[in-house]
Length: 255
Ligand code: ADP
Image (cartoon, rainbow, N blue to C red; front, top):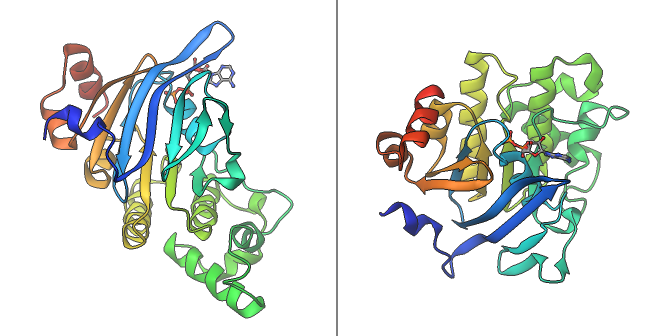
């Protein structure tokens, strides 16, 4: 597979980003990013801090609008050329770096917030599903009654993952979701989350600094640099044959 082929939209593309630009004031953060992602695959986005990775995720989620270019999700134009579908109407899960739980709700209520109320009707069904989601992120069922401020940063991050999984999104956006976890827990949680997403056939985009995570989690790696996509392709190819010296130096430093 040539690196460019992963970037070419096809009828199977779940997400098509076409020449998207975004500036904040005088800062051009995204400078014409085009990316196409097939349904059910996992893409890791890597790149130096400030290269625009989080901004790209926020545009896909619908928290920001592009200045120009278009975003198409599951065949529907969600942003650009006069179209705008807000975040809550996109079938997308998003886990931010800091988790950002609702502080006034219990852990269980935070997770239940994302559940389909028709599918999980009644207290028993909701409690069972919440317990299942907690187990997926290695937390005991008793955590459902706690409040977010009683949890460590890593535990809050795992609850944020469970809440995003509860929505059963077709597309999951993960921004450094495992970075607050210690090494052992990071691997276990990553495996459990990867299995859950793969079983459900969820298309996943993961921003990560961790090369091992990109290699083990992703079907393709996209390298961002100064608001542009510098390279995209199979993880092994990207890491062994970077497209240029700057990418090679960045990937070398990211080990
Ligand atoms: P990355 O995730 O690769 O570290 P970001 O997308 O977070 O990069 O940020 C890229 C640049 O955009 C940074 O210079 C950041 O300061 C700027 N930026 C991001 N969001 C905003 C915002 N809401 N207002 C102003 N500047 C922003």
